[in-house]
Image (cartoon, rainbow, N blue to C red; front, side):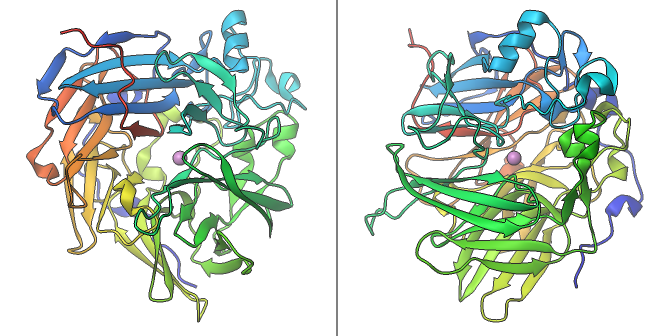
Length: 501
Ligand code: CO
């Protein structure tokens, strides 16, 4: 059995491209809500860039001064950057989840967090409190005329895209039961206009236990459910993301076990009870999106995967590109995430897994050894062979470090380009926006929110995806910071306020 290479923390450390202090300062709560035209701009916003970038992520890193154990436990805050006529408007609002409203009213934590945040009062105060706080902090998508803030363990919250008001939990026209899991990583199958197939939003929900149930959903652009199937797989499944092709939905079951006891007894968060078993294979679960063909399970080298970049079918094989970690990246007991030593935890690297249906063999190769996360691509290439991948990346070519750069990889030439904002800039997920008249796969813009440690504020960076080395087309400097975010999406519609010239 192949294994992923040894961690690169043996790489000799030259001077770091960042200071921990500046990196850490991006993890401050942002309790304020803003709405303003962005005026401090370096460069120019393209006149042809029209639409709205929605971002989600934890807006609070504390509740009433009580620090969270992990940023992933932070209440979801939506940022909206609306572009039109060369101008941009910024607005942010917290998702008014039941937990956020109750905790802001009392000024203290009422819920435990999945990633280890405990209520004050020690284990006694936390034991047997297994309620989940749906914090709506992971992703935000616009589908079926609805803006939805997603959190993988429960149903979405719906927001008004114009005001960002929270409209409440949304069960997708009765598709979801109260509290039913709906993943934070839908994939949008672009469909095929020539073949008369419309785009679809494909997503899943997991019920994990001794065995796990995956429910697959497919929605038409109207928001109507057109396909739903359920599949039971052996073992505890930790599934954050998946990949699709026209015929398959692909999941990586990480080789982990879950011992719920410390969680139930109030000592740890649920996610802190996950253990990585490097001697077991990662299981790749391939589920047909339609028809009665059986689910296939392939054994791959042990690795941990949160995010997939893309997948496609080619010559009787299935190709899956994913960010693989040598181990489950977790903190040592009692250590604060703010004190993390990046060199002691494994970095994510881009791996290509090639699954052969005939031989059931999986070939795994590291394509991008540079530390990278939050992969993305042109939306028309989802599930199809593609040439270009984009992601957040570290400044240095090897070793684990915060994301400070945006990377473009060309699978045809095998070359990568990087634009780095080191030493003061810290990157987030890039979103690719196709140029409205573009035909080439890389004809478009990359939008990414950076945190600038020297200004202690954030900026929206616009890069020309055709060539990152020329640097940003525009840097939109915000008046404040946005804590490091998770995922987001771009919608062609302008949802900002009315424009007055
Ligand atoms: Co994610």
